[in-house]
Image (cartoon, rainbow over all chains, first blue to last red; front, side, top):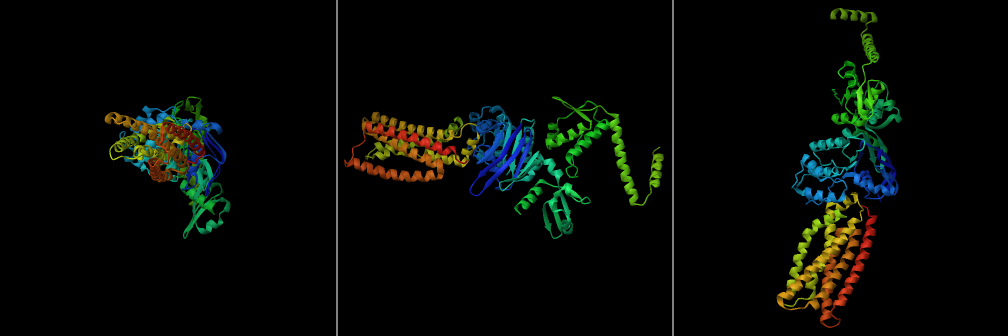
Length: 280
Length: 125
Length: 208
């Protein structure tokens, strides 16, 4: 079963429109939602969580849709960029609130997970570092048998070690087809390694949504001279960056000239180049 | 089972996994009917996408190197000597093609190559 | 609903004791010579109407509203909790004031309860009415607007109370009596319920 199915999801604001987003997150996979600030990632996630209503299009989460969509919330663990609790809360306050909100809340699991992650149990949130707060949010999201984890810019402000720990947790979470993750970020390197699917969001539009491996297969990075650039087929070029001494071009591997050396792309460059082309 | 992933050498990761498992099956390091790690646990251990490992396993199964038992997992297929022989012949052909290309680039004839092979055989014996 | 109430209670644990102390102090100053006006007796009730603005302000600071809406359950529970908690807080302050007055009756032997009860009831109604006004405004426009309006209203209440007392003293209008007090409570409750419905309607489709 697909964990998330979006069809033509649209939301209008005065100065921004999320324009007809259609994507699918299969069960058991991690999808990275990449986009610059203001691209619409948080808007999309707010629509998924019911914080705002779409103007058109449909959302289906864990098989629930339409009027029943709210039933999915018990099975969704979410992490926002800002922890939703008062800064004076300690672990036991978080436990108390979550216990009253989620049917399957497991206090024992929460406290043991918090201990494993090194979250102090008698400290106020205000005294915790950003990394610890994030881990607390994640521990809370993981302690009620969630089947879908949604993280919105959750790894911003985390040091490399903490990010590594979070990656481990996410890998553990998707141990079977019943558990999926949607993680949004503008820091691409965070997502590149761990994701199964990559989606690019730019100015409210979905530029692509694809298996990460296929992206590596389909696109390649070519370094060439300006003359060679001129000889390339226009349609094969996804994007290019030209400097005084040559050019970096991202192209479809299939359409690449045979004798050129094509190196692997990285997702970040692919995104930047695609955005530049889209803007032009 | 040993799998070493090199992120930088340009070969797709699924291909690296496929190749390494295959050679371990052929060499006998992985014995017949030995259970392979699940697609997901392999992906988790190697910290790569589960789709990648699935692809490698699908490829291995398609070529007859492994088989799946529903509900249990993936197992090494019994050594198929015919498959082995084909595989080895294929590799030898690849090597020959490479040798001939090198030979032509430094002006050697096929006869010269055959001489060199004979010499090597005698040396080894 | 329980989660919303628990969250509000977390703050009330600190707000209510403050109101408690304020209430006790205001009854003391009211009863000590020189003769204080009615306003000092009910001022704590009026200040208790700050509860909605205070709670919303604290919620906004921690983004609790958005967080709560993403949790299971109806998002309107957020509003219901506010209304319930506000009402109970005003009842709490009222109870403290009534008890303090009764204690004073026993302590001093002076019994002015028949004058004080109507004042208290009217004060209760005014406080409830203020909350009925604040809550939809804050729901729609946010806590910061609510706080500003709260201060403006407190200022106006002080002036209005002065005029009211003056008019009673000069005999232009009758001092309130028990039936008047009870009627005002009834009216205030009806207005509170209407306000509740209005806030519910506003919050239903609010962007969070």
